[in-house]
Image 1 (cartoon, rainbow, N blue to C red):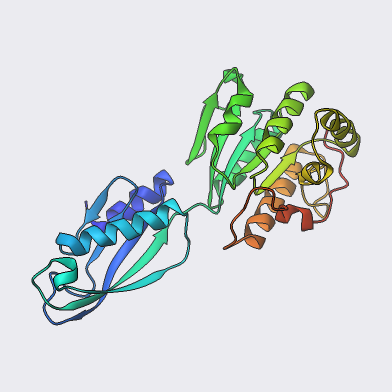
Image 2: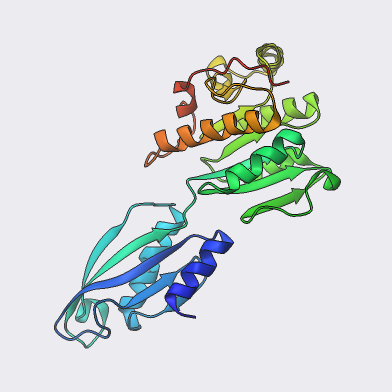
Length: 278
């Protein structure tokens, strides 16, 4: 498959990759400037000449994928003894991350607000896992790039997300919302946690979470009510737009920053919503 076809297919699948391009050649090199290679976590498409140069390029590209880097990178390589290649020239490679999601999001709940929200999130540079115990609540057709997860033990899915994830909880059951909240706050390594509900619901949850030993500063990271206060309305799509807007504001504000355990979420800096969403 050509590199351009591979990029198109990977974009449609929502799979991140790194485009590696030779942008400068000096002396004898295995491929000319302009040659390209696409690297994913498991595959490569096309070649920049093989040998140790290509191996090092693949290694760097996969390190960028693992760290979810979104910054381009230039690297110069001498094709002599250090790389074990006989060409003897030098080359400069450009590494361009493609399709790396701004946010990895777990949406708990396939009710009416969830059905309005998930297509919005899927249209953003996000990777979405949509989780519910009720198979029949999901629509027949899912947006591209959305993974449907049906699990009777919904809370177990919290641990399947990587550090720095976004969590949105809007299930059909307040007790389940509480258990999910406890599991997410216990991890305390999220970039964003939004819980659907009113200020009254928040007060009740904080009381019960205090009884479980959660610290005030940990509970303060929870967004409840969630969503942008400037987006008014109580229709499912209006609430969904409000939540999506807050997600966008969060990942834009946190661009280039690492989310560390215990670090206050950037969402704390956002204005509190006044809408009752329960």
